[in-house]
Image 1: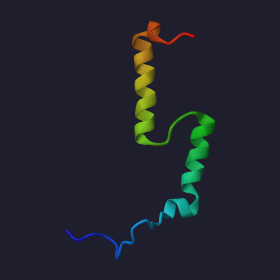
Image 2 (image 1 turned 90 degrees about the vertical axis):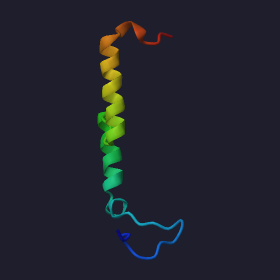
Image 3 (image 1 turned 30 degrees about the horizontal axis):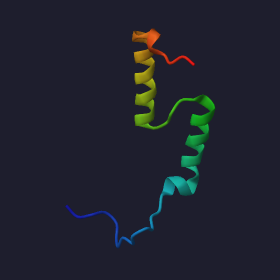
Image 4 (image 1 turned 180 degrees about the vertical axis):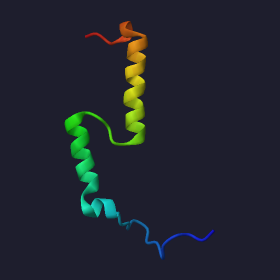
Length: 62
């Protein structure tokens, strides 16, 4: 299979999502709602919630 794109210059990249402001908008939404917009972030949040439901006494206390 051939690679997509043309000549690659190390250290130089272009992201159309960043150029349009989509990345920043997603970050703002995630900060305000507390809900991650990435797949791994959402999996971590849901996983922690499930574990907390299964074992409520394991929470750290100060």
